[in-house]
Length: 403
Length: 227
Image 1 (tube, each protein chain N blue to C red):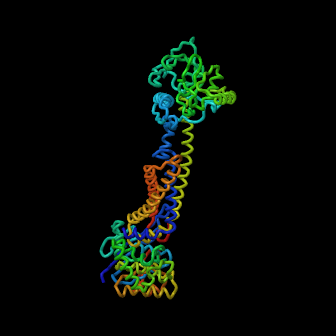
Image 2: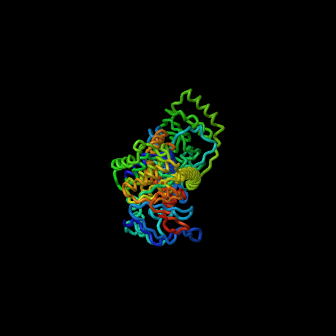
Image 3: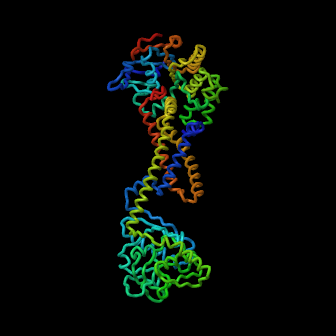
């Protein structure tokens, strides 16, 4: 049988190379499908995910490098947010989530005119002290008669204490009554500022003190605070910086009237899920269409090949081949087409993955192996269809081309 | 001479729509070793079906078929394949060579199905081709050969396993008169030289007359021998 297979493979013709190219396309499509749908199980898994709406994946990009230079801020902004998120998400059944937070972008002066706050469960903070950072806790018990320090808070905190909320904030060695006057966007540039405008700004009296030693983003932030009726005391403020500050006030004045939409985590999750489902549905549909087209293409080539192969099968039967021999031969031929096609497609996709820095498509050996399995399955179906013709017809009919 | 082939009360029917069509009925036939026999008859008389049954490509619906004393009707598919491979050689009207293979490789195929190595099968195939004067065409593909050459390659493929019987279905049907004579001479030569039994299906009376025995089929039944 080995000799028969060797002889057959030696005589691969244009048709076989056409099948090879088809195989290559099918493998690429299957691989990309799996890659795009972001799951090992590819289309099937995507469909499964659609059928299981409570299983979602949240992807939040990593904290930027500049922020990492200040661990305190990283903890405040990434930690708080993630902890909130974790808490909220963990309360949802079967919710899968992962990630960290992205803190990058423009300063306060580049705020959009509308921002959406993604908040936590309102019961959360009252249920337990909110461990933002060691030694600093927030408390809901407030002295409304005390002088209120205007503060900007992170979106997570703002969700339960929107604009205007008064609360106590552990600042430095004591507690101060604070009023939320603004919200930091989820994308915010810290510009190497050691103590940025956050819930933990340094305060003296009724003024917000901005540490302007390094920050270049401070001007617009100050303008924001100023416009909310607070007096601002400046440290290390040069005439040049003062001019910049004035310009920032003018520039940001028209944009200070922010429309704030509050959104709970559950709502955010729903919104995300809706968007994700749409994305997955679209990707799955495109992938499924591509896959079907490829399979039809391959089947077309296989079927177009059948008449020629059927006469050949008849000849082989006449000279002493069995059905098993013929199927073994077909299977060996398919393997000789699929395996090189798989290797070529895997190398191509690996190269693509590297070229695109894994941003669009990520090569996975497991996915690639799965695509090989699927391709072999398609080919086996093709062989099975041949088997049907062989079984139905006698050798003589095969030889006469009557099928 | 002992009988190589024996069919008794053979019947062959095919499903046709809801009913059945009888192609052969009440066929009783014996073919001796080394005999040359032609089967003739009009189109649709069942001669090709009879040849297919003799070659183990079709099974009798009813009746008995013995090949060298072995019951063919009861054979499994793989036993039938083995019978065709080792004991029977086929020659077809349209040659039925694999187009992508060379003449040599076409002749090698039956040997490869016997499990013979590529090298050994190549040697034996080349011998078979040489015996038919085709050694120079061994590396040619069928499309590069004339009709007569292609038929001789097909004959080489049929004889390479040294079968006991050659079954030829209209072997000269696609050839001109001159080539027809060459091919018939080759086939009859195989019979004379090696004692190979030769059964030829033909509707050509000239071809039929060259065989020692002629049987005619009419509406699926054998009419008396015309020897």
